[in-house]
Amino acid sequence: MEINPSMFKAYDIRGIYPEQLNEETIYQIGKAFVEFVKPRNVVIGRDNRLSAKSLFAALSQGIMDMGVDVVDLGEVSTDMVYFANGWCGCDSGIMLTASHNPPQYNGMKLVKEQSIPISGDTGIYEIRDLAIKQKFTSSVEKGAITSRDIYDEYVKHVLSFINPEVLKPYRIVADAGNGIGGKVASGIVKNLPVQIIPMNFEPDGRFPNGEPNPLLEEKRIGIIERVKQEGADLGVAWDGDADRCFFIDENGEFIDGYYITALLAEAFLKKKPGSKIIFDPRLIWANIDIIKQYNGIPLINKSGHAFIKERMRKEDALFAGEMSAHYYFRDNYYADNGMIPLVLILELMSITNKSLSELLLPLKSKYFISGEINCLVEAPSEKIKEIEEYYKDGEITCIDGLSVEYPAWRFNLRASNTEPFIRLNIEAKSKGLLEEKTVELRNRLM
Image (cartoon, rainbow, N blue to C red):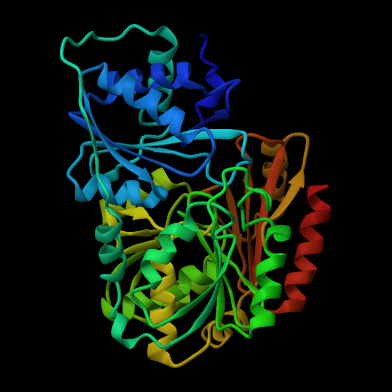
């Protein structure tokens, strides 16, 4: 069966089951993975999608037919694969997931030893070419498969980031979107003095309540209403493979990942002042403010998990955060994690005796943000050059797209890799100025 090269993306492999990604194609991809990485063993986890079990069986067989052992983690979150890869000492790992995509999709996230990601720049396209050619080194010996339950060890690992004894008995509305997050979160909170009010905790690969993507405004309506109805202390939601988490404050207001990055930086720097903290250039002022306030070192880096993780290793950075709600931790093999942010926010609320909205007030009243605005344009790169020329009197940087800064406002423009969109983010030091500049830039992008 021919392998569709379009499944191989910049950060993962993703396709529709069974038309694109199926048992035959994933068997060949498994062999290609071994041919490229040359591991001794591969740790494999999967989410709860309907196609996951049969795809896992075929993937494992392809790997074992190449003489390589498989460690089967069962149904886990993506960040549990990252943890297991480092903790078990395996020299590669694969997570079977399509994250927040609709149920007909499945895919793979790939890592080398110590959970170093394999991306388009570091091997995905080579694996694609090997899978298409299907010319592999033969192995006389076959690999073996063993099962490993890492839930208990993973829970200990997550809780090692905080002092559980200081936590207050908060009431938390938690929405797992029928993904794997409910199973994972249940194992963590049973060790804490908090009460979970569960929403969509039953894993269901059909995703009957819609695709598990809390970044979509319509997917947050339910949890926002539930937080208000219950009078809960906060809300938390995960995407399908639970490697990203999203917060709702006690008033039912969704909190942008930008502000959560700043709060997590505060939580870490209170414990380890002087540490390096990395964030992406879409929005920066709140992060710089908090990091300097707590004697940290702010570092701006291109977004994307491969770029962030590489910079973290180079700088030995303690923590990194992206607007997209990916949060990375040095003491988690420099990998992103969707549960550690929750326990850190709970600890910060407890030790400061402040609600989430109270913690955020100094930032939200000082730095006003537009939220990411997608602008459809015919020629994104030409339009960005045009904008750069118009705003040439500002301070210009091009770490990730175009950033232009003035004393009271700034913006970042990035072209989409896959669509004719420009993504715009604006921050300003007053609400009025934000509104003015948002209208101005929208008009210039039309």
